Amino acid sequence: MYENIGFQLSRLPRLWRAIIDERLAPLGLTQTRWVTLYHLWRLGDGQPQCDLARAIGVEAPSLVRTLDQLSRQGLVERRPCDHDRRTKRVFLTPAATPLLQRIDAVVREARGEMLGGLSEEDVKTLEELLTRIENNGLAIQARDTELQE
Image (cartoon, rainbow, N blue to C red):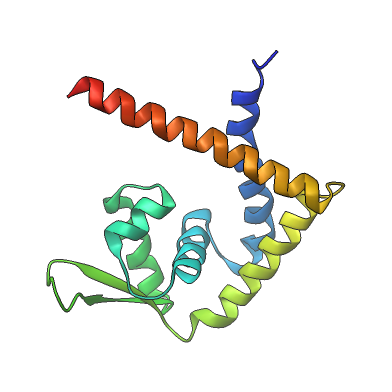
């Protein structure tokens, strides 16, 4: 009965991002670039690189390459942390603002279309269910990690 849920949960983010990717392609943005910019914007300026990588779900070296590209485009800048000079913090530049507004509009439009036909109550229930599933997964990971130690 539940056999397809895992497959659906794995396909859905790819489908969602593919729709957004297609709509952002005319702006010359790859998925890694728009996802990085969008996460930094949502999380707030001054994020440590390692925290940003974790939030996006990528390895730090991959993020460094993306940040190098975004930096060359004049969209982000990296500055040393005041408390730990080994840590770099990432900041959006003023040039990123109009691009982020466009990204946000595309993301909101896609979200509206993807959730089309669902009531506000449906969406709230979906969010609650996904949160429960995620929490179950995190608990399983924590338990399995403890067992391995």
